[in-house]
Each structure stands twice: as structure tokens, then as C-alpha cells.
Length: 253
Length: 329
Image (cartoon, rainbow over all chains, first blue to last red; front, side):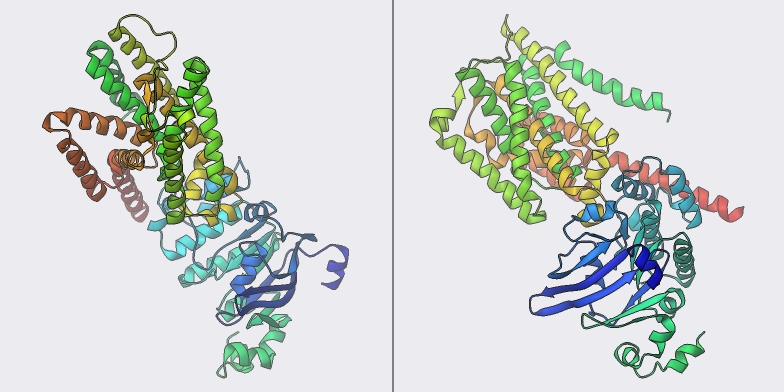
């Protein structure tokens, strides 16, 4: 990892990111990196600042301090759509799709956003991969939560962003969809994409991630490979509670 | 239904309807038809911004008014031809629309509606009080009609109808082309549905919102210029908020977000209002109000929605067929 970062800048580097909401310090001096071809899990209790970090990276919110580098270039001053056009894709904690438009139109708008003109074949094969070819002309609001999640992810995969931010992709989805999403993430890592993943399902995160960043009260409290995080007493106390001993976690695998 | 049949089903009544005022060349029929078409372009322009792009304007009569005054002032004080007055109104209103669009970048929903309402009131106040330019509360007259019109009054009215029909239908075609054949159409819809998602996908929402404001205001201004040259009288009341409310009513009646729906809705609603004058000039407005209420409650997607609902039924039937084929296969 160290050798890779010395030769080329990491796909994403977050340095000393800070955000205040009035008196609340939502994110406090948070720093971490995501290399190309790796998955980094971002975990922490509710309100620990994970989604705020996503919003700061994509400039949906503006940071009070620190900086975000994409391939070594600071992107703090860019508008939301320019961040996307650099190749940074994201999904949202509450599924965001165009609910009154159909699946095909949703995919078309994802392509439009990146200026892709020749997207139809790829969209067709993505729909087949995600098993919703039959829903091509179904409006977003008629899809199940799981299908909406998959559509949201498919809209990102269509445009092949170099960095993909996934915010709780499993929330409200069926176990079968969960496996599909896990396969997608592995496949994307193989293709060299950098993935930052927020998820409350610890087993999912630990299985998939190359590294895990743990946040609590807006601060990073740990950063390392899953095995190290699992054994970290501070993390266990802060996040998993007394019932999740390291031995229990090991036993699940 | 084949495409030829569909074209025939829509095209034949449309052509017949357009030709009717020329065949049945009664001055009153022409008078109603011309005004209906002017309202139709006005309603379609509102729909581009508010129905299609979701940026609700409660002050659209302000653009209509600026267009009408631009035409009147250029022709009266500078003696310019209507063929210069109309494009000038189009361009100037586009520029004003762009200016109004900037605060709209930071505002949504009710707040944007309030800003546009305020804009309409400002135009009304300026038109009423800038007497040296606008003629004040009495407005402007004696600036003439479309340049080049001569002959007997009926003939003039027939030519006016041809001019207004030509320009408004071209306007409708341009608006339909923009929304259906260019990237702006899907971008506008994306903004209407979810601005944050649109931007997060890489769509330049700032650019497209300003484009919608500019185009919408320009076409509203053009319809105002047509009004000025046809009626040959502009007064501050054409920019009143009741005019904005009426155009919204027409668009809702026709089916917002479709461009052609509000165009058609305005023609029908204007026709109904005039046709019901025999029941009394207040009762006809009450009747039109009742029609709008019924539509909002029972046909919220307007006339255009009747067609969309049918399409939805067909899609659902297709899906059921596909699903049963898949499960049996």
C-alpha cells in the first residue's frame, strides 16, 4: 500500500476534513485514503458523521476545514455536477432515483449526466445482470426497495466512475439482493475501481473491505484491515457493544 | 394502432380545427381563435419552466406584459415594424428571464413561487407608474397592428389569424423539439424530479435551470407581443397576477409537463370561457373555475393525462403478459 501511494496519488485522499453544524462538530479532522482497486469500509454508530463525510467529498456540503483530493487533485471548490463528471459516483442513504420516470429513463439520465451517447447496449446488459430487464418501462416508484437500490447502483455502474461511494446499499434489501450487491462490489474492485462503503451490516463490511475506517462522534477512532478492527477493543466498545466479543465475530466466519 | 392511424387521428382534427376560423370567417370566431392561440403559446411557455422543469412561476404574466410593452413601445415611439418588435420582445424577455432565473438557483418550491409572484407585481407596478414610457394606468394604444396589413377589417383579421397561428404553432414545435429531441428535455425532467440526484449524476443543473427560465420567458414575451399587435392596446392589467393564475389553470387543465397539453388546454378553456358568455360574464368564469376544480380533483394530469393513463394501462397489460409468459416458459 505504501509503495503504491508513493508512485501515484491515491484515488481518494481525505485530509483533516472538518464540518460543523451550529454547535455540533459533525466531522472532526477526519483523514483516510482509498486506493484504486480497493474497498474501504466506513463504519460507526448512527450520527458518527459517515454520511456527512460522503456529502463533503461530493460537495453536497462544504467543509469548514481540511481537503479532499481525487487522484491528487483538490476538488473542494467544484460544484456537485463537476465532482460527478470527474468520475466520482455515489448512492444515497435514502435511495435516490427518479421515481416518476421508468428504469430506462433513469439509466438514460445517468448517461446524460456524464455525456455518454453510446450507453444503450451497456444499460441493457446491466439490466440483465441485475435481473430487471422485464422492468425496463416500470416507473421507479413501482419498484421494490431492493430493485430501487439495484437501479441506483446500476445508474452508477453504467457510467463507470473511478471512485464509487456507496451509502448503506443493504438498507431494506432482501438477502438475495444482498449477495448480488456483494458480487457487484467484488467485481468492481477487480476492475480497478476504488469503493468507499458505508454499511451497518458488520459481517458484510468485514467480508468485503480491504480496510475499515471507524468513526465515532465525528472522529476517526481506527483505520486498518478488518482483522485488526475486529480485535480493536476501543472499536468494540464504541460500536459493537458488549455482546460482540472478538471470538463471536470470528465464529461467524 | 399504427402510426399512420395515430397521426391521422390527431392530425385531421387539428388541421380541421385550425382551418375552421378561415372557412367560417366570422369576425367573432377569428377573434376568439386568435386570442386562444396567443394564450396557448403563453400556457406552453409556462409549462416548459413550471410543468417540465418544476420551477413554479406565479409571475408569468410579468414576462407576457414585458413582451407586450416592448412591442408597443418599439412600434409607437421608434416606429419599428412588428417584425422587429416581436423578435425584440422575444430576446428582451429571454434576458429578463435569465435575470429572474439567478435567484431561482438558490430557491425551491414555495420560496421560488414567492419570488416569481413578487417579480410579476414589480412589472405591474412599473407598468402602472412609469407613465412616460408605458402610458401609466391607461396603457398604450394607437401603435398599430402587424406591419403590412391592409384592406377590409375581415381580411385583416384573417391575415392576423394566419400570422398568429403560424408563429404560435412554430413556437409549440420549437418547445416540443427542445423537450423531446435535445438533451435539455431529459435534463429538465431530471431537475423537476430531483435536483440533487440530477447534479450528483453530473447534470449541470445551474445551466439547465437558467436555460428553462430564459426560453420560457422568451416565449411568454413573444405571446405578449402577439397580443399587443393583435389587440392594439396594452395596459398594466395584462400583467396582473390573475393572468398568471389563469395561465396556470389552463396548463393544469391541459396536463402539465407535456407542452402540447397546456397548449391545447388553453385553446379549449379560452373557447369555453367565450362560448359561455351567453350565461353571463360572471357565470362563465364561475363555470370555468368549476371545470378547473373538477380537473384538479379527478384528472390531475389534465387532458394529456387521459392519454398517458391509457398508455399506463397498456404497459401494465404488456407486463402481465410478459410475466405469465416467463413463468410458463
